[in-house]
Length: 87
Image 1 (cartoon, rainbow, N blue to C red):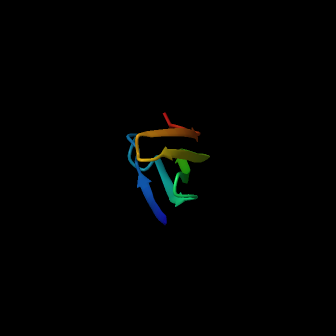
Image 2 (cartoon, rainbow, N blue to C red):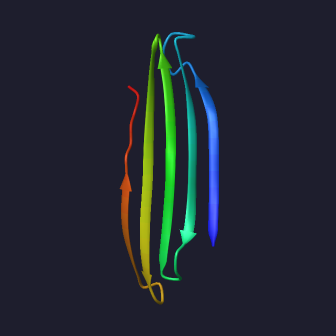
């Protein structure tokens, strides 16, 4: 089974003086059952932040793999993510 989700949106005035900053966010993720025991969740987030005359672009990937042992007694998970925060 594969499930996907996509979200986007504009953000204005992130706590700074009115009209001095704005940004755009796009996020997409998918859950894929590779086998009955192996599951994957992959996603990306793209962030664009503009403040005064400077723009910042960040690509934030994410990947998670889960192995489930029957009958759901134990689950092992390995994941990777890259995160950023505009301060």
